[in-house]
Figure 1 (tube, rainbow, N blue to C red):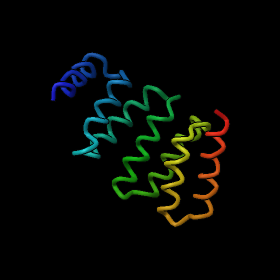
Figure 2 (cartoon, helix red, strand yellow):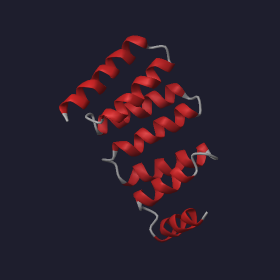
Figure 3 (tube, helix red, strand yellow):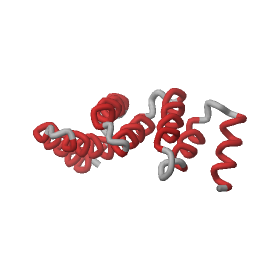
Length: 118
């Protein structure tokens, strides 16, 4: 729709605009996960400090059934932002999906600690 046109125009003018790239990626989540993933990857290259852009990639990979890749990408997000409880929650779900129940429980415990620390 119109929002996608506006975001596309911003990215065309400013190819390194991470916010526009991420929002454009979000607009493709319901229909084209590969395109959404590629846009989030581009955004993360321009905001290397932004763990949430990498966490979003982990979620997309998990939605695509690529749980091992999702685990690696989400771990990368946690290296960028180790205090992000939402990313720890994503990581715990991915670990559980992979059958790594002990690791999933540990990650879930970190989620609880990050909530208490606020």
